[in-house]
Length: 270
Ligand SMILES: C[S@@+](CC[C@H](N)C(=O)[O-])C[C@H]1O[C@@H](n2cnc3c(N)ncnc32)[C@H](O)[C@@H]1O
Image (cartoon, rainbow, N blue to C red; front, side, top):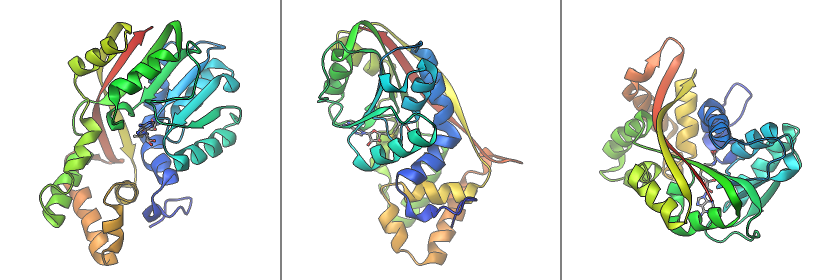
């Protein structure tokens, strides 16, 4: 299956992540995260767990100085895509750095703002990552990060169909997506990193997918079960995609899928 630009959705990878998740949802929440952090003109900004770089791009646009923005990620593939998307957006001066968030080769007291959108829950050493995000901030510098609060309807539909087909517990590892959706836990992490004025806000992000089958195909191709799905006969693969779309009947309107997702955003200061 291809998207309207002819992209091979079944191939997965950073481009499909960007197409399926970022352009439909995370681009809007990136703007909101940059706003929550109060990114201002000329700020030096770090985007941790930057993925394909949507937050870095939003911060660079708002700060007016792409050269002051750095994105970091453990995935070289994500960073390559991030550099390409940034160049396409006229933001080629953003710097990209491959490293674990818990050990960033960056000097102390460097950035005005550290951002992390939907990344911390995936990091094995969360206190270490928070300590690093705090370390590289200038005194008085601001942190803003977001995590999903609960399982989204999309995750629930995946779990229902894929656990039924492949066996109970198949999608259990995906619970990591919303594993940090707890306000107390976020406050503890901020306290542990000696950050001040931590403040957690709950809101609902909304994503629209005009072509539900194309979206679910791409989302599956970017998921941990991509390999298993790719080995299925095409008819069986496509039947499972249709079953997932049918599970999402409550989230469909005349424009396609319309999906809410609960989010926690924490701001704090060094
Ligand atoms: C759901 S993506 C979010 C990407 C991006 N922030 C966005 O809003 O689109 C999570 C990202 O965290 C990165 N990641 C996971 N563990 C990491 C770690 N220990 N250090 C740095 N990045 C990590 C992944 O490679 C992935 O790009």
